[in-house]
Image 1 (tube, rainbow, N blue to C red):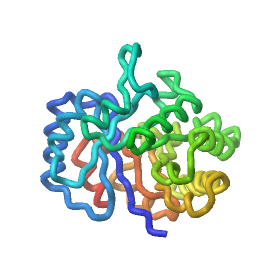
Image 2: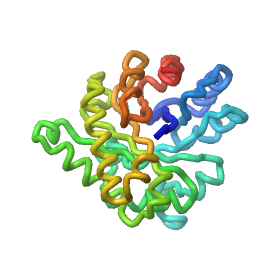
Image 3: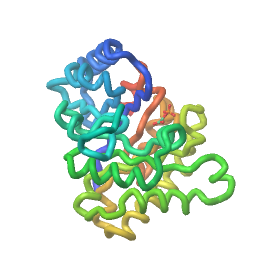
Image 4: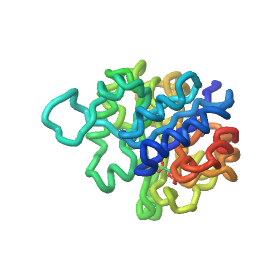
Length: 248
Ligand code: PGA
C-alpha cells in the first residue's frame, strides 16, 4: 500500500502575520517536493497571509485548532466553516498542548473530528502518552483508547480521510526524539486499533505521522519506517531547516 507522505509544520504560537507571510513566501518559491504533501499550520491570524503566500503552489494550509459548534455565543472560538471559507484544508485536533493547557479531552476531540469531517476539513488527530504513562507501561493501552474515542461514530469512509499524529508528550520540544523503533511500534498499534474498528483496508489508507523533535537529521530514518507516513513538526518547521525535513 503506497501512502503519500505528509509533512505538517505546526508553528504553535510563533510568527506574527507578517513574519508568517515572509517565511511561507520563501518556502513557496523554492518548494518542489513530489515526495510529500506539505501543510503549514500557522496561528489563526496568520492563516490568510500564509494562504496568500502559497497560492499557486502545492503547499496546503491547516489551522492548529477549531471549535465543534457552527456559530454562536462562543467568545474567542473559530468554527470549521470560517476556516473552510478562508481556504484552509486541514486542522490539527487534540494536540497534547491543547489537552494539557486548554482542557481538551478524548470526548471533545471526537466532537471536533466529526465537525471537521462534515465541514470538509481533514483532521490531523493527535494522540500520545506522557512520560509517566510510558514508565507505567500503559502506552499502547492509552494510545489505543485515545484513537478509538477520537473515531467514535465515524464511518469507514470518513475515517479514511483522517490523518493521525502519534506524538509522545515526552518527545515534544525536548530534543528527545523517540527512536524509530519506538515510534514505529506505536504507529503500528494505532493502525491495528483502526483496523479493529473499520477493517484493514481502511486502516491501510490512513496516514499516521510521528511528531516530537523531528529534525533534518532524524526525519529520513523515522519516515522510512513501514507505519510512519510522515511527520508533524514543531520547532524545526519554524526555520530554514524545514526545507531539509520536507526533502528528507
Ligand atoms: P516539536 O513539536 O517538533 O517541537 O517537538 C512537535 C509538535 O508538538 O507537534
